Amino acid sequence: MPEISTVTNEDFVLDVSKDLTTDKNFASQGFWKGVLTRFRKNKRAMTGLVIILVIFVLAVFGPMLSNYGYKEIISIGSGQDVVAKSLSPRIPALHNLFSSSAYQDAFADRVFLFGTDSLGRDLWTRVWYGARISLLIAFVTILIDMLIGMSYGLISGYFGQALDGVMQRFVEISNSIPRLVIVGVLATFMPKGVWLVIVALLLTEWIGMSKIARAEMLKIKGQEYIMASKTLGAKNFRIIFSDVLPNTIGPVITQVMFSIPTAIFTEAFLSFVGVGIVLPQCSIGSLIEDGFNNITTLPYQILPPIIVLALLMLAFNFVGDGLREALAPRIEDM
Image (cartoon, rainbow, N blue to C red; front, side, top):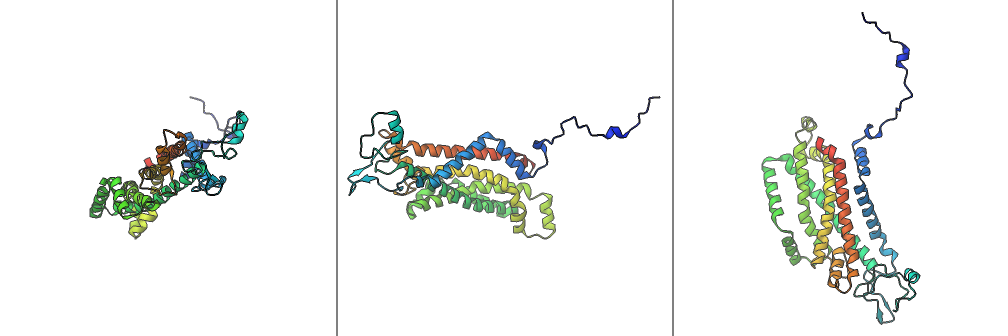
């Protein structure tokens, strides 16, 4: 017969020689904490977030760092005798450090980081003021579109049947109308400016948000906790906005991150073709238009707004990709 081993108290002594530290990657944590952990590990997403924060800070405080207003024509003398027209970017102290010759004009001691435009306005101030306008239009538009699109999609997906059919036919008709046609019609009845751009974006950007919200509603509305809420007598709109809405925040946030660069680019395009921001106000698009008119003789004027626009587009797409990857485990489980 095999020998039967006896169990003693020494068999239950903790072996302190082994590393018993908790693996933080697999430690129990909340959903949003896990999303933040995965997002912070994404180098591209963090790079995009830093770029967005830097541009946002410069858009808010950049014009304050200059001594000139965004519509101020810089001149010397009474009656604008000498105007700082089309000056190249310059920093006199840095120029004097590496060159023995000083600037040979009336503005030799002035600092113009981005130069001046053809009318004599400081491009540093105008670029960051324009970025402020473009970001403001994009964020206001996307916030309102998110509210409209989410409400529309959730209601359509929840009630379904005939109401869903009618609402989705309206979405298809709205989505089939080209954006330029909508802008052309609005330009007939509205003056050019910020409100024309906002209304044009409001009429077009909500559709993608409503499709995301409707798809999430169709996934969720058959789950057990929704059935339990109905059994307990919860009203339809309470179920939609209290039970379903919190569980669709992840995909909606991702959609918002991809919609913001689209709104910024659309605003830039509308301003570039002349139906957006009206002078003397400026935006990224209007500055690109001004620079494009002088691109063969004064190419430096178009570079700052183009670089800011490109960085914003890339940064928001990086952040959107990072959020989508961070939220992917939760989206797959829904």
